[in-house]
Image (tube, rainbow, N blue to C red; front, side, top):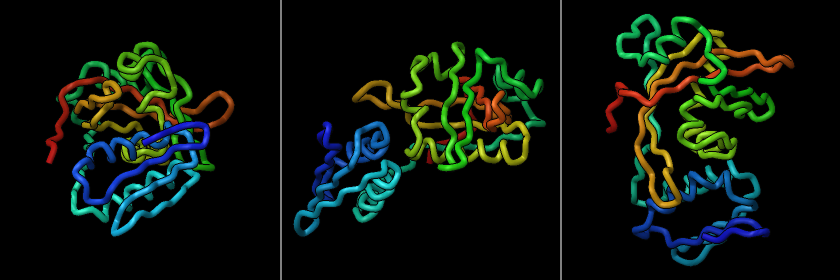
Length: 216
């Protein structure tokens, strides 16, 4: 793979053995410059260029699906009952009972109606996100368009639509550095939130803790 002012080029041979690295590329496409050119060998060399990062992500997964190699899902979410908080961590339990999230503990995400996505607006200094990646809005969990974002943001839409607090457990793979990924589990409380300028979104409080999820 190469990146530069002219975009990103990904080159590989179908049915090769290095599919783990290709999956990593798919997850990080949204943070790389476009346009995105795929050069792949399948009974000959083929080239395809895509401008939009989300479309590039989906197209790359279409190509992965043509392989005889199965790549397992990297993000799992389990909805939990808000009336049974026996397994909830202290911070999550406080948020669920109080129905609000303290600014220093939460990450505020605004809903973008044009794209149907949630964009990180503010990161609390004591949030799990800040502790793991710092205050940068460009870290992996803040980016939109990859599979992690698609899966975890489904609960944001449910909370916003119902105007109810949502409680769930999440198990996902997070990049620790450029070469190492790690499975991490966390509990999450999602609170509907209205910004001062009238925009709608959610406040998200997470805490790394035991989760009721078994990886298949």
